[in-house]
Length: 168
Image (cartoon, rainbow, N blue to C red; front, side, top):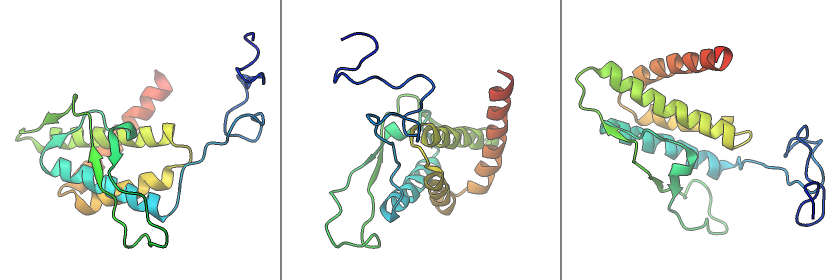
């Protein structure tokens, strides 16, 4: 085996070919994000779970999809998505903080950064997951007591992120 072949003897994709696109070689599997009612319901509940955490003045600090677990048994055959409710568990609170700050603006900023990190994790890790992000934000808005203020700050955080991407 040399550097131009994989373990199974096939050629690896070139740097210009993208895995999951039409120009990828046949030995590359197309990556698809699940987008059914169960996935959307799970995303909604992720947002609601984050909102409940924020309602108790806890900010996660590293809110990526790798730090979100679903603690449910498999969906039984024939069960509709209306009867199934995902049980979401957030893990890895090593960078978390509890905000007892009387200035609500800094608390809203920290919450907005949590949401921005989650958005970026979804988009960069899960191809085509924009609708799932929208569902998570919808769940957050429905559950968070200060969601309007947090979303105002989130828009500001997004703008700062875009400036950083453009100007380094």
